[in-house]
Image (cartoon, rainbow, N blue to C red; front, top):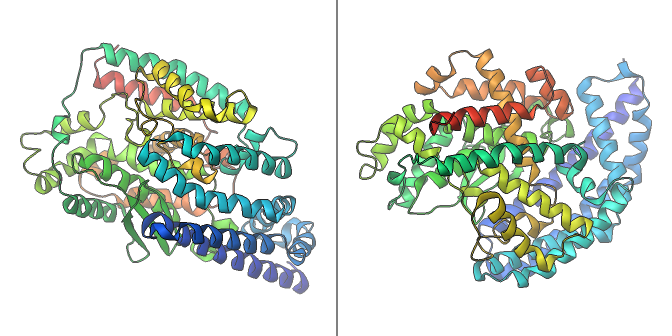
Length: 506
């Protein structure tokens, strides 16, 4: 058992970690406010506020007293602390070691540029002027490369940025995975295009009032188990999940009157993120051990619900009557099988967030290749739109006519989130692997979904993923849950089987 002195030192560490977490929550709410309801005129002052708070957080993170507490704890005997307590100590050391390497001025400049960059990006996107955003992007490449030199001097700069979102992932491991995906999926996409089979999805297009879309999304989010007493749903340019705490989870979507599925699936996707946040281990909500593991694991939870559940046939069977009730003029005579095929149509498109399940990974691979090239200097920012368009044409057979449809469509680079994009497809792989295990553990999942029992799915995810926090590495978690580390072939085989069946291919 730990001595009284050691226990007291640990309690002091906990208080420091909780304080830092709560300040981070303030930053999260400020970010949500900026994206959802802040007046445009507040952009400059908000950038300064975010920079100031980032500076305070940095000072808290590099406090020598915090470092002294960690030093006294890290070499304790293994049996002096529980697994949860050791995780807090290890995570605190990792964060402290990282933060002490980064100059405060660099932290603040990155925070300010991210806040200002969002406003510049939004305006450039609206006006289709990549050249207006290019200086922000160029500065970010410089700053994030400097950050990498301080944070992980032994790594390639892009690997360092990648590691922030997916711990332990490197270009050496990721590039072959993505190259294999390209080799398998692009020919399949081409075969589908040439097959002549075109499932009817015309009934998904029409004039769908936003108030009815909002009510429908709200209803299904509740069915999934999202707790609106500890969360809310709003509208933003780019759907996201944020907020200040697992008891204050903010999810957003966006609406188009001509297509209700896009906003509905955005709601389902972001609700998946929200359920992860709300499902974290209750006893440690302000401590590192309860935080989501990596962005890929976080994405696995949103994609689990969006792809594995909502795009499955059982979901169509369950919710077709509900859709007809809300939008009777457009879904008359539509069967559950027709709905299932319609929401799984493979059709290359320009916008990542509107991409189907099969072409989506290609969008991610394109962005990954561009980010790598920006960081190794083989691609200049001014040449990015042409490189983007060339890859779209090569991989998906379509070429954007504007930068709004191309290189300006995503919010990520405006905040300096390089290395984030791979998390989406890694998350899809984890989701597929987790789903395969869940249907072994709960053998009547399709029937349960058809009866409206989504609670069993939430419970399984709560127990196996959400409440595990950061106790394990991504590979350890995958092995603990499914019996093996991440296996990309499971994802490839799932896509090939599903789409070969839908399109009648051999």
